[in-house]
Each structure stands twice: as C-alpha cells, then as structure tokens.
Image (cartoon, rainbow over the protein chains, first blue to last red):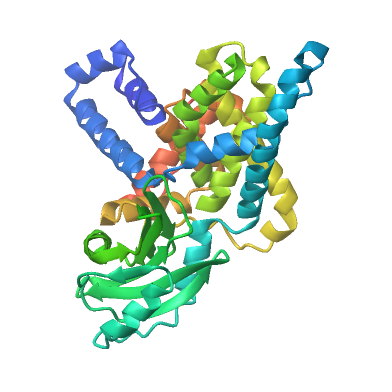
Length: 236
Length: 170
C-alpha cells in the first residue's frame, strides 16, 4: 500500500481494520501522523454527535406498538368459559386503557412542563423570598408540608399541569435559578432527563408522584432536589 | 410472551438508543426524533416476519428510519419550503458544551446535506460505505466520495482553510 491509497482509505473509512493500513502506518511516519490527526477528528465528531436519549424511550416504543392491538375472540367453544372469566379482567383492562388513552391525549409531561416554564412569570429578582407561611399554605393544597428548610424560596404558587394540581416553586442560589414543579398526580418510575432550548431539567419520583426541576445548565438541580427531598413531607 | 414479541423487544432494547441518535441528526429535533423512532419500530413490528437474519436487523432498522423520515418530509413539504436552511442545534445546551464540540457541530451544519448524512451515519453507526449506500439509495463508490469530501471539508472548516475539492479516485 502506498501513501495515496493509505490516505484515501483513511479519510473514507477511519475505522477500517485493514492489515495493509496497519503495516503502512508502522512504516511511514508521515502517514502515522495523518492517522492520528484523522482519528482525533473522528473522536471529536463522535463526542459532538452524542445526544441525550429519553430515559423511558424503550417503554414508550413498546407501549405504542402494543396499544392498537386487541385481544382475539376465542374461536373454540370450549374456551367460552375461559373467555367469560377473562371478561371481568377485560372490563378492568378497558378502564385502565381508557385512562391511559386520556393521559395520552394530554401533552407529554416534559412538553407541558417546558410550556409552563417558558411562560414563567415568576419574579426574576432572586433577593425576594416568599414567607414560609405562604409556602406552607400552597403546599397544604397538595397535602404536603415543609418539615425543614430547602433554602430560600423566591416563588410559590399552585398551578395545573396536564389538568392535575401541582405546585410551582422557584429556588436557587448563585449558581442559578431553579424552577421546581411538585407533581403528586404524575407517577414516575425512574429519573428522566428533560431538555429544551437553553434549559436543562429532570423529572424524578417524589413520594406518591414526581418532582421536576428546570434551570439553566449552570443551575444546581441536584442540590436543590436533594434539599427538597430532605425537607418535604407528604401528609398521611 | 410470544416469540415475535420477545424478538421485537430484544430489537428495541438493542437498537432504540442508536436509532434515536440517528433520528435526531436527521431532523434536529428531539420530539420529532422520538416520533420517528416510534414510527420506525411500529413499521418494523408489522414487517418483522420478513427479517430473516438477526445480523441484518441494524441496517434494516436504519433503512426503515430513513424511509419514515422521507415520508415525514413528503407530508411536511409545504412547511419545509418556508425554512431557509436546515437548523442544526450547534449551541443547544443538551450537548457536549466544550468549544471544540461546538465548533465541530457548527462546521457540520455548513456541510451540504448530501455529505453530512453519510458521514453522520458512518460516525454514529460504524456502517460500511456499502451499507450506507443501501440505506441512502446510493452506490458504495458515491458514499465513499461523499464521506471523504465531508471529512476534508470539516477539517478545512475547523482549520479555517479554503475548501479544496479532490476526488477519492473511486
């Protein structure tokens, strides 16, 4: 292999495992340097192209594919009894399916949160704080209270997310403002990243429901989440 | 769980992440990317019996993804005409925020679409030029030329050098 062939193949397919390329690289210092240069570009490209993947993507794909399917009627008369027994289960299933369908008719939770976040009219002044009694009154509507302090709270209001009662708080510090939504009616199995233009966020399980935190990339989302977890108590 | 269902779930677990990333770089929008991936798997479910070799699943799914994206473009054609250019989110906060990654995404955005897609498909999926050609309806030689030129252009853009077109000879 000559230098021209080596470089042509290198720029066309840097991942090639061609032994002839290895042999040429070992023998030619200039091409070895070119190899390092191209692989540096390739590695940078791979990093630049990485995109966070939604945490529950697989579940949503499987749900979507399975949703349109309906159970077949048993063709064999001897299965009639089993079918009758299954009817009760099916009725329950139908109720669940209808509940799910209603939920699907609502915008996705992350989109709903981003919409509220982007139309956020909370005060930008981070030196103003809400009185603890006011915060407790807002939380009481959700059946929650603060048993400790999560730090200064700059905004606390009830709100509605996807037709469900929620609480909208703004906390934060020098690292940046963090908008928090307490969502007792939104069940969340696992932590999910929430990404929008110029905003990072996370939705995580909290008590019987979920909590979402949104802020600029510099904001200390995890720190605020931890402080809320430590201080928030759900009433029995 | 039926055999088809188990086979399908295995496909989703193995390929969903990679397909999502490929979808994202096709449409530059994470919500559309998820829709695209869901459409892709919905179609894959319907055609699963036609997939004989498990080893061919990855390229098969990528081909479906691209067809679904093409269908989406057909549906949205009037709206897409109003766009001045493809908007690649070079500065979006969800990415690697190092200056060199930003510069790379900016340079990628300047590549012609015909160069960018084969390159991204190769970098993200590690496909051969022949496989990419099959997905994009191009010959392997054309793919080789395009990824060669795409890398050269990227390098020139990053080094702030004039772009010089040279064929791979293929």
